[in-house]
Image 1 (tube, rainbow, N blue to C red):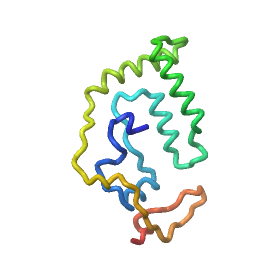
Image 2: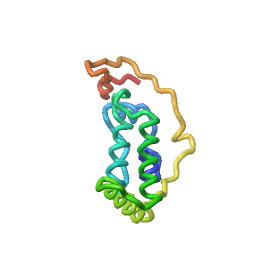
Image 3: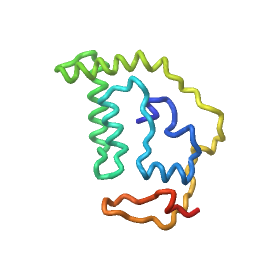
Image 4: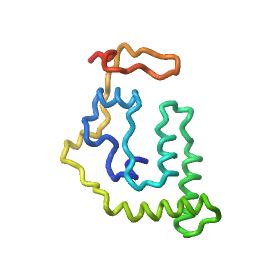
Length: 138
């Protein structure tokens, strides 16, 4: 969802390696572009929740996207909330052409998945792993 918002792959500016993986596990999330509608940001943030059971399923995502598409495509809002959604997406349509989607030159394998080896992962009560640099062994 962030790539749709920004026009760029998540974390494109850094190497896709074990350090990035650790940072993501510790809460790093990709940025969302300026002008992105708040309803879209909220859904994207839910999709990136550290706890997979808190993430929306495909049906919920589809329902939200379909609703927003209907509102914008038909240019009709049935209530105050839908009017806010319509205005937000129209504003985003004005901002999108001003955003740069140009990426720096980098190796084509940069965005390719790699096998990462983590040792000494310490489980904590929340079910999230402590992947601080101090606990990482190369």
